[in-house]
Length: 215
Image (cartoon, rainbow, N blue to C red; front, side, top):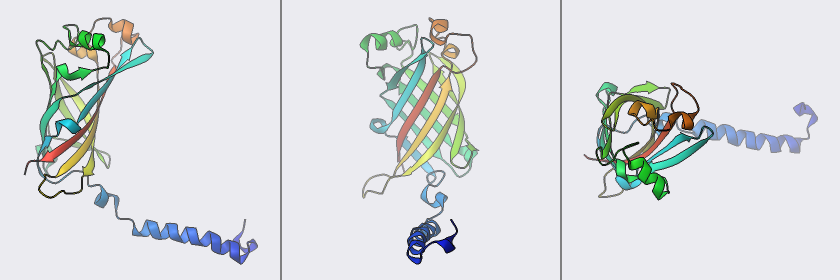
């Protein structure tokens, strides 16, 4: 409807929220100022109680089993030169949980993670690269059961927590990755689980990590 057909009272009612919206947009700080792409340079240590490694695996073709690892340690080095950034993560393989004891014991067996012989899962990356405005990718090496595979992980910086006097700076990241269990020789009942021979991933990983500045 053309504004000339509206009464003055209606025109004023419309103009007020439009003006308020325009003012809020004009006064909003740039996105980068609110969410810088990376925290300040320095070394950071993973805060284990506030770091969650979650995964989901294809199950019986149509379903997915969900699980997690409860003990993750490591360090991250942030540098303005992206090639000098480093990531070192160690996961206690026996800390896995799917909330089913029988299934957990099966996953710890030699058919899967073989935690008796390979107690840790390692991920090491050297150098990162941008992937869009807010995301980065690290082409890290994932080691499971002593088998090494290059697994890209996409991650974003979630921000720095408000400072607390006497405590180190706290930052947070969210990362995602995907793997094929066959790459790590976890092949028992594989066709039964995924339904076909494929080069596509059948395990998806999400990491929500909080880290504490070391300097």
